[in-house]
Length: 373
Image (tube, rainbow, N blue to C red; front, side, top):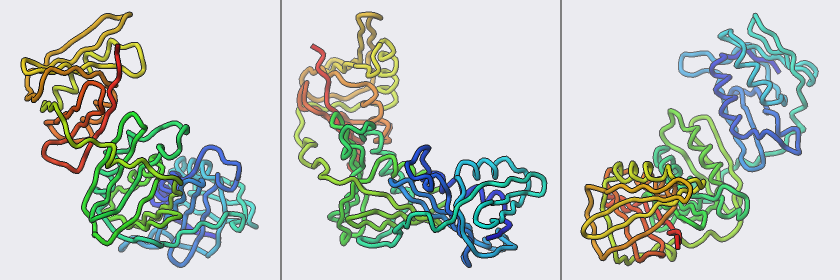
């Protein structure tokens, strides 16, 4: 195999594929990129068992020649070494040639590397065949679904199902749900009513997918019982699914409330941030005190003292109520609804409450209060 390639295009392809390279793997071939020169261009594949990425660097892009002086073939090269070598070279073009399936000679006319490589036949087969429900949505829509929910997924491998975002197509809605059992975040968008599926996708994987959307307009999604595949531009991403039944959010999210608070999102966020500095715990606890006569945010610590701030602009419905909560959970929920004004709806002091955008019912943030006495 041999080719000469534009450095910037080569590096971009390597960086895309690198999202599927993990620092450690019991299978040394999964620490490598699979490079394959074909009639379509240079295909780069990476896999870490959770996520597999295939990306194509075409021979030409419009009038621009990207790859020249090539012969077909394939090889495996350690991913981090190849990426660093390409990053360090200063030339506009980089040449790569594989010698006897053992050495990859890489250079830009000034700097030369000889990297060990392996036979590509040692690389595991990756099933990128699309099956199941296949549909397309704007990349911006999937990005919003993920960014609105991923933070609420569990970040520890104590309950694997809660490390997932549940992506469900049903009744003309595509809904993303994430929960760590103390909070829940859900957002939905409209899709073709014929699409019906449910997939538990690692939140980390979905976050990696949307980071790759730069400059892309639409993403095609193929969801089956075994896998989910995202295709956009010249890139295909396959994710494993997490087995199990995801918590049913419709039965968790309350529909009837006794108390409602409408408040400025920036003002409430600032107040929570200021009073929570007194906390010595990782999870700062803040108390929200509400009544017709006024609304305040407070926090206290045996070690540092206490702090409180009055909220000047609000509309409250209900009798007096005090609710304590994790400051980070509520701050993230307020930011997720993306509105200058938010509504908080409560059943009672120790019942889960919701944070919503009063003008957009596609996002719901559910939070469990904290008992302080």
